[in-house]
Image (tube, rainbow, N blue to C red; front, side):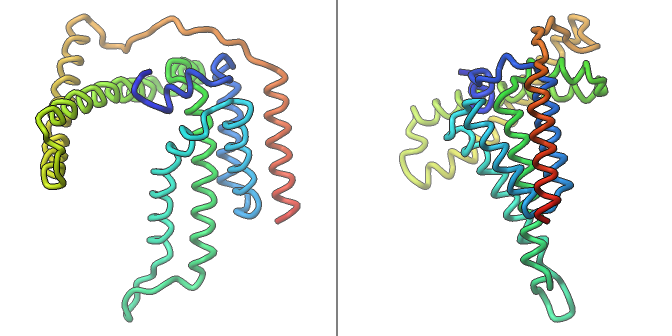
Length: 245
């Protein structure tokens, strides 16, 4: 276990050994459909397709997928509410088309988020980053993504270590102590993670690592059948949405 449920699901996924380029095409196509197709029924169909593929052929655990979608869904809900509030001389009020606007925003966002989660829960970062390099994504963007990914584990390790120390000292034995310990935990994790990240950067620079860490990626062959099914499915989603709308 790596400490990240989404990363663990990606390594255990039935699509783990599929080409990252194939999965990028499918998930990227779903994201484009979620953004461009009408909310009804386009966003609904895209969301159902992404969830169905994740829980079905990719065999991503349902609990992991639902836990991963909770925070994005809460963020979308808050954004939808704030987007339909209008400010006028009479104060705050709802926009005339509040329901339609909120539904459109939530539908597009949730459908696109489900498509991104499909990629995240089926493709480890060690496969995705080399694929992005092959697609000529700017090296700076790929390097920043790799650094952030590595620092996540530094953050999780610091969080786990400090939390265990607080628990051993009865830091969470009462509600008042829990509040105090949580504040101290946040401050300690941030400072400790920043210090470890700085030392890691200095160590890499001392070894001459100024152009990024390159490794030999695993070669995963592309599947023509998978690509054909992906394109056919995207075309069917588009045609159905246009006809119904």
